[in-house]
Length: 321
Image (cartoon, rainbow, N blue to C red; front, side, top):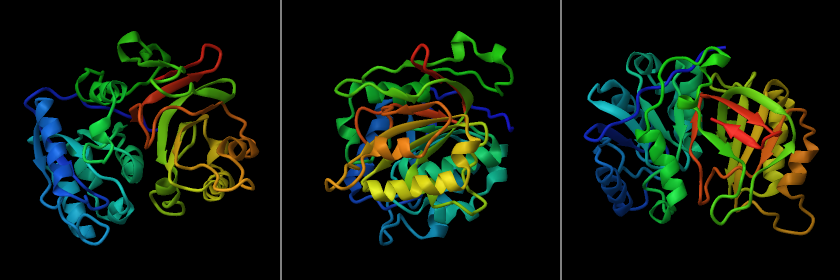
């Protein structure tokens, strides 16, 4: 298994790239809000040349969006890359990304939702740890609560070790973020649907996005990993279909554990539809499973280090990041 590595987190005064590798941003005010947010953090936001473009549902052509992505990693003055919009379209630039450049000039990379396919590709092809976090131009970010902002900003500024985590001895207090599975403000507590203990590199993200790369060179690799899944705006039968595809592909047999995050606006539309916990139960998973972990398209939401080693332990009810 490839050992993952991370970069030292940011300091005030660092230049950071803002890019939109997926969907177009509906209003200039949302981009402006993102710019001001990072300025308030003491960072110097630098917009990608095409992040305000509107090309149908996309933020520019595939070539334009890929150019912004590759510029952000090639420019040595840029210390981190923040995606500020999800939507749809990230998978369309995967074959245009310069992964060798990322290896030569690695830096922190942030985003979620459709950005999940970029996380998986970067993790698997370069060994870089990336961060599943909110995006500052999204409509609900302006209402983000203190828990969500604290989670996000800890992965921006809080010092973390660099280099690979190679042995159990590397599980030291200075690199652990222990999340006791309790309710977030206004939320219900996560729970272990399948009990047990599991360790592995964290992978995954948005269900629709990562399922769209099945059968491609960018397909999610869950072997020996903790598989995180969240979703938004999909009816339970559609979720059932995608989860079953993962089951048939062996993704759940290969992984060490599964974390189901938020399933926002995914409730059954009629009394004949199964609910999400029942769909998960019917998968017959044999590994430890956490349900209702607070990470996804709703607030409050946690931030997660994809590619980092994590541990699930139902005996003491924790997820160790």
